[in-house]
Amino acid sequence: MRNTLTQLKMFAWTVLLEARSSRVIISAIVIFSTALTLSFFVGEITITETQQTQAAITAAFLRIAIIFFLSLFTINSILRDINDRMLLLYFSLPISRPVFVLGKFIGFACLATLFCLMASALLSLYSNNFELAFLWGFSLLMESWLIIAFSLLCSFSLGQVTTAFAAVMGIYLLSRSITAIILMAHNPLKVYSDSVSQQFIQGFISVLDYLLPRLDRFTRTDWLMYGTVSTEEINFILQQTIVYLCLLLAAAFLDFYRKNI
Image (cartoon, rainbow, N blue to C red):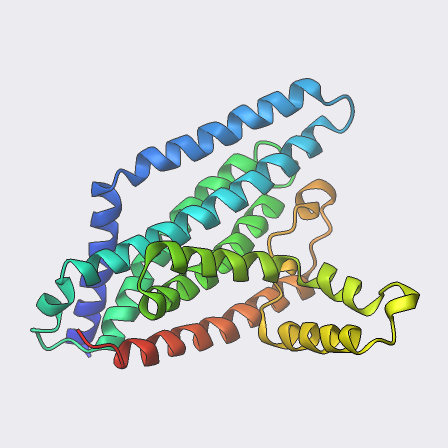
């Protein structure tokens, strides 16, 4: 047990060391500096509800930037280990593959926690309630953990940065917009409502609704603008995160087991 914990800590630490050597701090400075600049610009051109508009625009930018960056960094880090034959070095030691995957995930999750804490601190400047900024950051953290887990799966399955990143972003954007897609699919123009193609589309969208996480209910901007977050929403986010995180990590374990090193 102690040996397993040591190995998990080692792999998590390698992620943080790689983040430092890859100048992740510079990327963080660029992201948050851009967010501040954007918020100041919006504050200058907004006539009413300036603070709420600044919070909304800054939150939307930070969410997209952090998710994109963490996904790309995760994919690039895993594929670098594979292409540089680092896995041969790791598994020449008594280390199991699940320990490698879980240790890497912990490292990426720690990096995501740092980014989300910084985002919450920045948004607290525009929110009258620090608790709302914290809950928004917590939701972003859960969302980023799911994206990291899916990025791990795509890295092992697809084996290329471009295709893996495109797959992750495609599923992410689909999950963020699934509610709007369902509404459009089930409320078509009357002339097409009974066609076979429309019924097929409705069935296909219903299957997607069952398979994809409801990321459209994560990290909502209106929490910061109107303070409408509820306990039920936070519980829903926790339940979705636990279920899909376990499924994604299990899929990554299985896919990595079948991979020849």
